[in-house]
Length: 113
Ligand SMILES: [Zn+2]
Image (cartoon, rainbow, N blue to C red; front, side):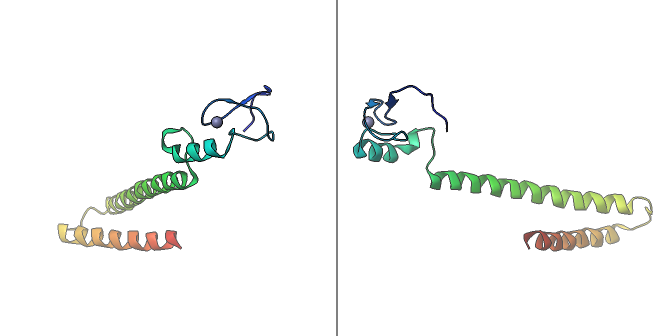
C-alpha cells in the first residue's frame, strides 16, 4: 500500500491531519482508531473476519458450481458413451444413470482427498 508522498497524513477516522508519529501512523489517536474499527462495516476496507467470511462464501459458491458442472459432465459423458450402440432399453439407461451417480460420488470423494 504505497501512499502519496505528501507530508501530511490524514486520520482514517476523522480525516484530520496527523501531526506526529511514525510514518505508518493512520490515526491521530487511539480513540480514532477504536472508532474506525467499530465502524468498519461502512468503510470499503473489510475486517479480516469479514474478509475471510466473504472468501468462504465465494469458495462455497464455486464449489457448488464445480459440483454442478462435474455432475453434468459425467451425465454428458454417459450419454455420449451410449449413443453409438443405441440398442439399450429405457430400463438399462436408468441403470446407467444411477451408475453415473455412483461415479460422481466416487469422483467427489477423490477430489476432497
Ligand atoms: Zn482522528
